[in-house]
Every structure is written in C-alpha cells, then in structure tokens.
Image (cartoon, rainbow, N blue to C red; front, side, top):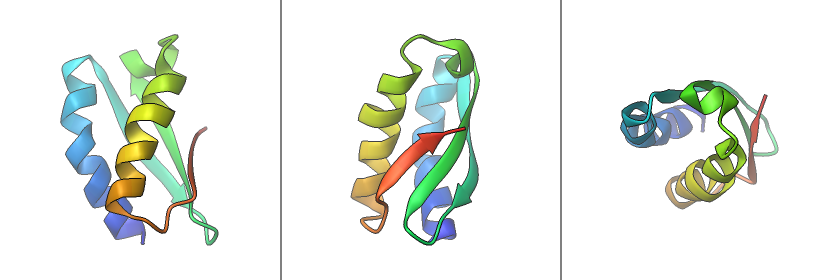
Length: 73
C-alpha cells in the first residue's frame, strides 16, 4: 500500500510545489493511516489543515481506498 500512496502523492505534489510547498510520506500504518510531513510554504500556512484534509486526504482516498485517514506530523 505504501507504493500506491507514494504514487498518489507524486500526482498531487506538483500542485503543492506551485505554491512553494511540498509533502513527504513518513509512514503508512497497518490500519491505513497515512502520516505525512508538510514542508516549504505548506508547513506554516494557516490553511495547511484544509489542504491536508480537503485536498491531500480526499485525493489519496480516491486513489487508494484502503486509506482511513491522513495525518500531518
């Protein structure tokens, strides 16, 4: 599942990079929780939680249905 998640993140990454941010995959738990680290402009952005839940999490769940949640660490 980690490979599928990484492939999906690679699809969303260019959008984040256009705004000066990025996302790094840290872990995928056995229960389907994806742990990521937001970097660059995304790290301190007040909208980062919206980006995480409404953007990254929704997209990852559509690409990899086994995912239960996405968390930033």
